Image (cartoon, rainbow, N blue to C red; front, side, top):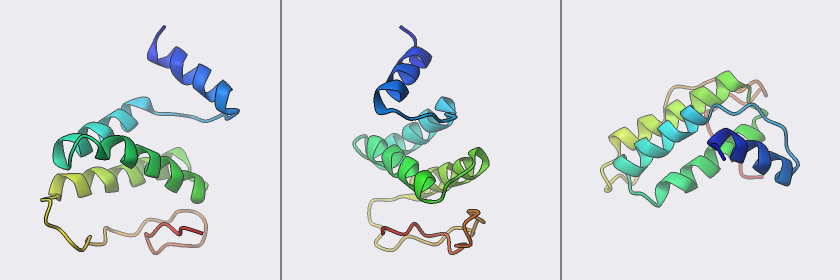
Length: 103
């Protein structure tokens, strides 16, 4: 069984259809695992998916959101108490403040 087979089977089990750039997700997970700590990688990828769902994100927007996560991981020093705001991106929903609403 390949990774692609697993993704297809998992999507079937979760009753979802999605375009997935697995290389992008794996790159973010790697950046976070190395820049923050290993347990942060699956949590980050979950939150990336959640952000994509909340914003009805296109593949291009998912790429932008993933870039934000990787950039944050690269500058993370473990002592940061306030996250700097990264450049705003139009998420296509009229909400361009760059923040994820947790409704």
